[in-house]
Length: 282
Image (cartoon, rainbow, N blue to C red; front, side, top):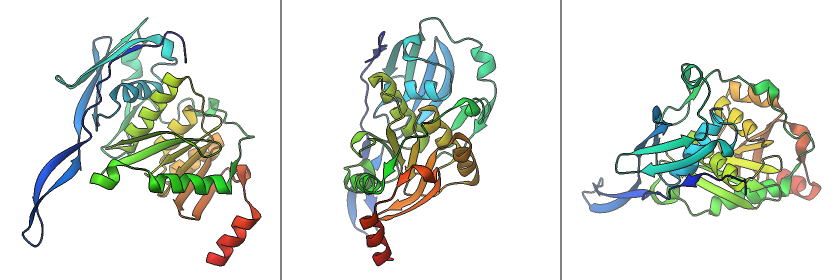
């Protein structure tokens, strides 16, 4: 664990809400729908942004957001993160303030994230300084294990739908963290926050998202130092371009035994028996 760990509240909120519905046959029943609530982030008493979230891991979400926005470089800079759902706000107290915070948050880019995410500054700022581990490898069998783990994972999506999930795996395919939220940008930020709190690096990790692989997702994964980004969905042109630029291995349409390896092909370790099985099933 990192030293000088910030003081955290423990303010997880209910993830689903019951509503009465009437179906096409006139039948009345009760279903669960995902919760969605605003969380306004205050840093040193200055309002920064309002995030729409399930509220399952608000402290980790806040930390990851600050990390991925490049506003805070280390966990030691933060003294406390306190969530109060009564006022739908989180108060972050830093140890020495954030230098030039007004200037650094003046430019905002609206992203393609569900719920319309945003990032401060230019999307490509600092990208060229990121160096991902060129020696990291992902075995074909490990990829299949990851996809199967996600398929069988208990989730809010299976219960109520309308959410995105992100997961962090070890290089051997062991699930480390799984987070769902109303937007994939929130889910990836929450995992970034959890990694920070655990003192965990990303060089030997694999990241999975149910959402499409946009430039925002690739940049955040790269900032976390993760060389592999997987999705059951597709990618965008800019997501592909950024992945090539930072040297990330991008895998799309991961479902069952099917996947599309778009970038970083040298990191994939194909296994003869599995390749033969795939050819027979084709």
